[in-house]
Length: 314
Length: 275
Image (tube, rainbow over all chains, first blue to last red; front, side, top):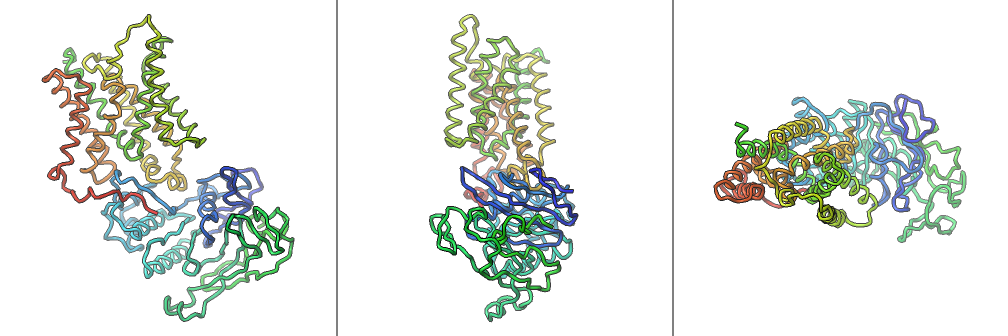
């Protein structure tokens, strides 16, 4: 049973935590993001990538109900417990807020759980520090600890490791992955750093005002640099894709056939049904990949309406 | 004991301060000082309407304050002007319209100064009952809404995502503020209510390690300011409302002295914004 913001037939599958169907947000006559189709199941890691202003944060906010879609629909399972790490958080310095108090911001928490979460994110020593005295990386760790401690069904992490040092980054990603493995929660991750986030990701969705393409990350880069950095190639994956269109600096879109349009929405007529002229990602099974292949339709907007398997035809 | 006007003034003032302190913390945290001012200024319009339609003063002031804040929220949504400019427009026009309306009603004589700057020495036992009753209601509501209010003050998105209903919390906060303005008007007056909301909270900041401590301390500081101000007013024969605000200011200045706070280092700059 799913609650939907708009009346549509809700995908009736218990394991589905959240599902977006052709969802879009419009502000001041401009579509921030449009035609987003995807869903997150229990235990699944979905990563949104894309350039600045691609609508990644907007899409995440839509998924968790902070923003209502102006088009399409968003369904969430009843009683969904969300742990959210927002991209930006401005705490007025006049509010005295210790890490301990921050941890209990939206719900009560036992001391043991509180300490366990801070231990996991590596900042148990900062428990009584004031939040405003934390460094950027420490603050991110505190926010992540707070989200983890809630024991959520779905974690939504908007660039969760921003400002975290390099060694800490991969440790936090390992942590996030181990939480997924132990609790079976779903994870919606937003990243600008493709290679780091990708490890353990089941589905990658490339956004640029719309879903450009999606798929599993390709396995393992052989690059010596990566081997040196992570030591374990199995936890690492790369992802590559080709676009059939180019976003011009002025926001218009040049398509493969040379034509230029204002948007690259599926309905603008420049995408040819069934015409896949580029790499469609194949399921690159990694050690962490425990799901049946799904959501692996590169450029779902290439196919016409009925074949949009992305988010709702399951 | 209640026969003595000074004791009544003390009781009324302390009652208002205990309510205004915790609420004032949110005004400071949410950067709503000007918003509070606007609501307070609209109270004079409430006074005028109450006289004109012969309705209860408290209800009229409360109603107008709520209407003005709703109007502000509506205008903000249209995003034609900055919130700052909108507040300036609403704040002063509400005050001006109130003054004009009062001047029109030549058949009623009202003591404008009492409304603008308070008349705490004239409070009746009924006023005290109202202040403590209304104050208890406000404090109880704040305690009940505490977690969602704190959470949405830190981040509305976060609060919303984790099921805290920040919009509802904001609405209730506005109603509580209107109520406090309605009951505090008689004590410090329309022009000075915001001072009683903000100065004690700002004073408490340096000595507080958590929002909860700050709320309690702000109430205590406010009560001290009322006591100090009233005794000062008695001693120096100064107007009571302004004297209370001056006492609050003195406490604030005291709190800034290096010896007063243990965590002097905390004063260092505004590190609030993270991205």
